[in-house]
Image (cartoon, rainbow, N blue to C red; front, side, top):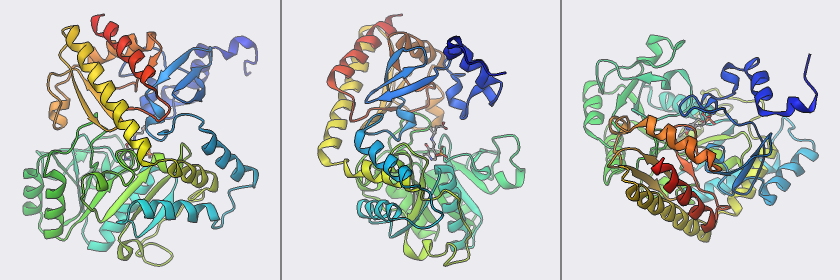
Length: 430
Ligand code: KE4
């Protein structure tokens, strides 16, 4: 029996109906607000920098759907492009011009991507990139960093075993021990455990995968020399360097982190922004590597909705609007928000720090900005939860977990930042 009365429109009723359907009433765990408390909102509309919930409550939004919406919600150029493809009857199960246009825009922005394959999620893109890396090197082990998140494929849901630089244990139920054991954990911003892993497992590590700017432990920038060091070690040990730029691609610079930090990976993974908010992922890099993929080479990978023309067109419309002036504006807004938050916290006697690169930032309830996951875990997550609820009560919606990035979009204004800082001033006092 479905409730159709007006009362059913309330958030509480939608939450109850969702909980009867989906684990935690959500289709992705973070949306359940377990880390911050409060009832998860049911959002029905986004426009620019704001979202509105089913009860008509409007929020200034820094979730930005966790990254894709660098232009803000419902940008007319993006929606028009996607709708046109849907009205044309997409998808077709055949190559469409929109795929070519997006692929060329990506390759133009990131010259390291000589060829690529478009898929429907970041998880899928990472899985495929690592399959290519294992095929290309004939090696099986993959090194990642504690606090790094690269989607939910089995091998990447791993936690440090007897210590860093050793074979890992499963970090999720349902991941076989021998699958997790093909992953090695190292510490972000520390080349020591990476060197140690290559010494301990000579000739066995296929790839190092890294978020060049860590964003899934909260935003933690690479220290000088870290990315360059990964490039040197992997080249010396004939392993591949994979940049997971699902968040940083087209976010921290038009050419992504590889452009911002002048370090060129062998393979790059993209997602989020390149789909303009529609389901997307991509992996690409050196032609000799990508041409290992079916139907040209022996690495199989496929997808019913890969390259969906509506996602392609939304992504291409987005990338066309990402000019230098937009990045300058995002940098200015990000810097202004960071400075405002720090000043507001200091005025309230709160010990906080901010990790920021461009328009992505994280507020840590810790005196010094963390350099790695161990330091991130010293931050006071309960304090963040209180802060999150106070900001939400003031009409500001922050990502519902302390180890997520806040996303500033091109739709945010100086007034939005000022309003956010004012709300933070009160929240820090509470
Ligand atoms: P998806 O499969 O969620 O499209 O992408 C996985 C992924 C891969 N790599 C990086 C660097 C990512 O940040 C992500 C996904 N990011 C999370 C936000 N921390 C998505 C939000 C969610 O899980 O609901």
